[in-house]
Length: 304
Ligand SMILES: NC(=O)c1ccc[n+]([C@@H]2O[C@H](COP(=O)([O-])OP(=O)(O)OC[C@H]3O[C@@H](n4cnc5c(N)ncnc54)[C@H](O)[C@@H]3O)[C@@H](O)[C@H]2O)c1
Image (cartoon, rainbow, N blue to C red; front, side, top):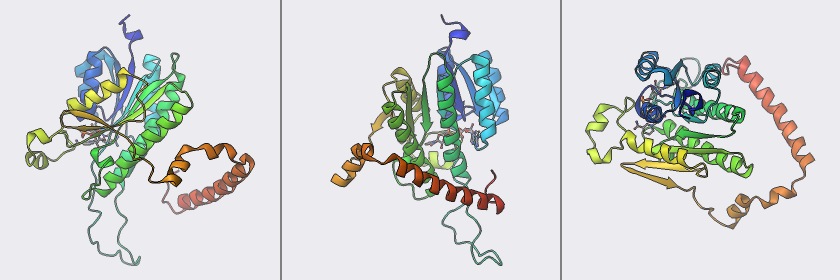
């Protein structure tokens, strides 16, 4: 009991700083072994050397699927299990989506908008969640806890940062959808997300923090409290935990708008589906999507 080999294991993306780091420190103090998958080598290495043998740092860009595989595989190899994944790495938006740009000569249109925030905050979370499922299923004891970092911008509109808002709404949708499916499949995997307000981390401009009364700022300890709550009870799943000030508030999805939506969500009709017709449709659609991917690869828009 309590020996390193019995200890629970977590993997935290973006764990070298901010709320990810506070979650790492909290779990390390409780005896967990934690892998930090972060792009910032200087911070990651210094955290790992400060916290000692319970922490493994793997330099990872979450947008790069192969690098995430390396981080997960190294964690599993070192400690033999992964019980908790915190898909937390994120950035603010880059560029001004609303700026009236000059048209690019010869194209008739403005330059391509920057979508890095979607790559990091949405695609990176997709890869982490997918790998979490894979490695949870490898655990001898079975199961695990997946938590993603969304944002208040995943619950409310955020006019100044629309692509960040889009990515974070997507994270809430991924968490709720995965939880619904895994629960109905009776898999012992919980999936939740945290939706913090303004938290004083490196991501936030100091000018923004200075402009706000201190009691309107959400401390990282509220996020740590939300994660502790998820880890304490695996029956909690599909929750979007708004972290506002000192409070953790579970936010339900909106109720169906009318009887048609209620019927669709009820899903009883699914048992009446003609499976062959469904498979035929999938085959035709997949052929079309293959063509689309090929076209994107050939035009250099798509890298794989
Ligand atoms: N600070 C806030 O007010 C706030 C509010 C709501 C949600 N969030 C979200 O919280 C999460 C953590 O951010 P934070 O506030 O602790 O900021 P932070 O900058 O202190 O920490 C983010 C960490 O993620 C890492 N990271 C960024 N891009 C990465 C990438 N491509 N690959 C790997 N690592 C990467 C950074 O190096 C950093 O260590 C983010 O998803 C952010 O969107 C922040």
